Image (cartoon, rainbow, N blue to C red; front, top):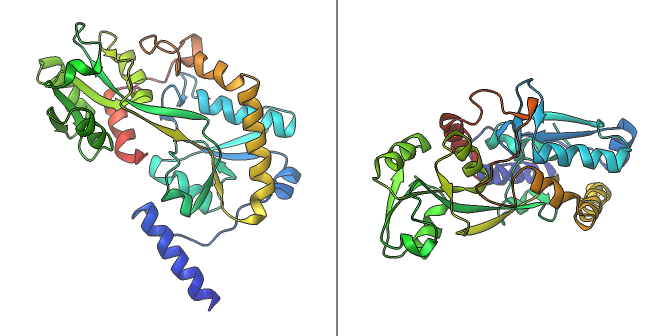
Length: 294
């Protein structure tokens, strides 16, 4: 009976995560095990400037990388007490479920369906859907009620756009590269995309602008394995995260990486903090978004 229960659970989880390979039964480490080991293992991405990317020396940088190091500092007394495992976007939850990592800090939106298979921390950041335009006279959402707006096919932004602009014209696009061409030619007045993706975009196309008004917001949370045996670990991380919020550390790092303040001021780039060549290109953004699934 127990074997049948495990099989049914695995099938259910596979259905929630999509067809990315079978689920293998695994049990993640509890706090006592992690404490004895002396470091955290964290799943991250490497192609999401300025949240998580590789700089010109190949080192991981970005807001989520800073957060992982600070959690290690708070939990173990040293910021280097963390080992990163770079994962593809479609593999972010699977890395936790397969016990490859203790947790994931990888732009994972805390959704109802995901909460059935993993646990989430309180949000450490609210990403948002924004419009990006190259037309300087357009600066408010209400100026786009009858203008064509580009959006990726099957994007969650489609529903937001339909609600905001019921009489508008949506142009569904196969890729951001196609969107860049239509934006440049004037076939669309704006492109809908995530704020973090838009930040990488305006680094490549500095004449384009992000509208300050958001179409929608969604919470990003740290991903933990489910189960009572992991409760102490989750509580410690969640308490640490809350303390970092109260102390202003989170806000400071969000501002540093350009994730909160003036939306059209690109994040700071100095020395090795520049992303590796190609990591913030439109082609790279397309690869990232196809896998994202938010």
